[in-house]
Length: 79
Image (cartoon, rainbow, N blue to C red; front, side, top):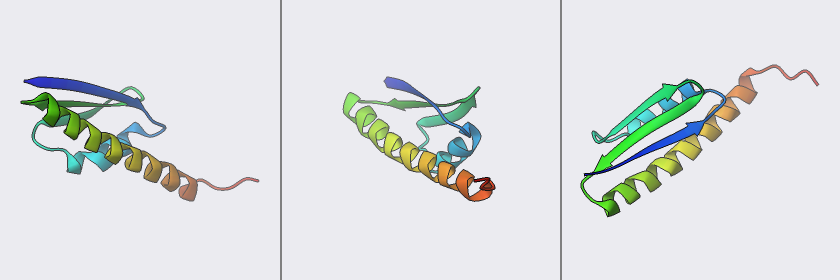
């Protein structure tokens, strides 16, 4: 078995974790620790691990961008 743990920092880690969790496979676990989203991925092969990690990082980037846009829409503009 191959395993990787990916830790990323976000302004709203709980929102990002909730956003990406539906895309997780049974071999993935996403949780929040302090200001971080922590995801553990386990696969039988290195190639499978690499492919899953790559897909996860793309999903994570989209979830983070959406969370940031959502925050901008709900935060009053005081300019």
